[in-house]
Amino acid sequence: MPHADQVRNHARWRSGWRAGRTGYAWLLPLADQPGLRKLVNDYQYALRDLPGFDLVPLEWMNILVQEIGFTDEIDESRIEPLVAAARTRLASALPLTLAFHHAVVLPESLSLPAEPQSTVLDLRASVREVTAEALGGATLPAEPEDIDKHVSLAHSTTEGPAIFAVATLGATVVEPTTAKVSALSLVKLNRDHSCSEWETVAEVLLGV
Image (cartoon, rainbow, N blue to C red):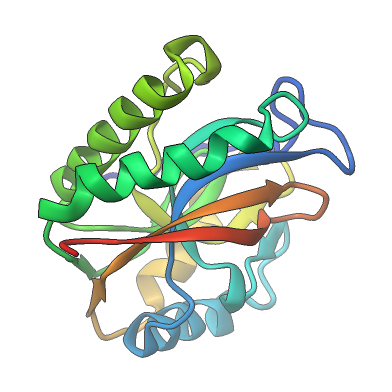
């Protein structure tokens, strides 16, 4: 994946978001992956003095699979049937094996792409479909221009050329790693700080 030439300020306040507001989302939490933690930590150590970026705490490492809707717009009684439907749909899915190699500069972040990308996209397609069936397609946000298929190391806090970030990542010696992910989480997501944080509502085991 090529590096971006320019970075821009990470816009955590997407349409409808405000301080204190939370939204339901499906994501893959990755803080419990020791190899990935080491890889991210190695990069973040090298990035510690690079201006213009906020490092993402290891405890909030994730791949965002699908945003659903704001918690103040979805009746809580609809969540249990959604989780049940997702468990039925994903009972035949296999746990994910994702490889992480070298970080790249994206327009709003420094990130580790998950490989194969098709694995994340296939999971997202299944999750989006079952969520639309359970809650109604109008509930789901429109498809974003760029679907998350990566773990963010740091978010950009400024605008400008990416040359120094590209050089720092390229000069950092790291060991690629593999993560085995056996569950998808439904969470209440908030964007009150520089990175997304969440409270887990339910877990859906893959292949169970």
